[in-house]
Length: 156
Image (cartoon, rainbow, N blue to C red; front, side, top):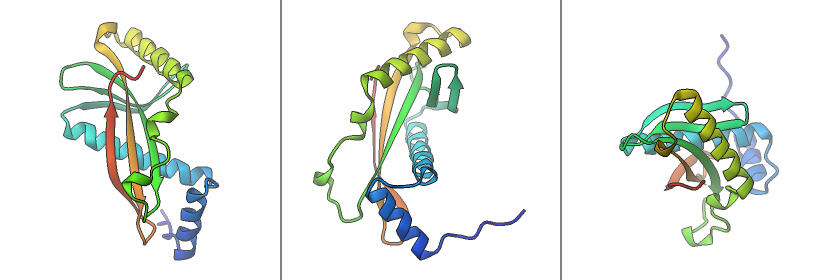
């Protein structure tokens, strides 16, 4: 198996510029999304959660994470990830990642939660939908550093 060559400085800068201006290729956004899901998973585990699945696909969509909180509640988790410029202060955020959990998305997440409860025999009163906002800062070398992970319980 061939080991992939790491990206050059020019490639890393190009990716950073593309993400900063919203013209990132889908694989760059996918990579940031995967990193956000991983950061969210680590934070939930730190809080005592059991992670049951990542990217759980059902007929009506996908749950980024599926977990059980310390109280035994089954939780469908939507992860929203943003990248902040390296020199941006915490006061300069424009829109919270939670703002992108629209009414349509909340309805979809509720449907996913109902489906999973029925399929797994979970009592519906022991199922919840949460959202996790993960924010990264782009470092000078192009790497991402998680700087903020927030959880909103019962978003849908």
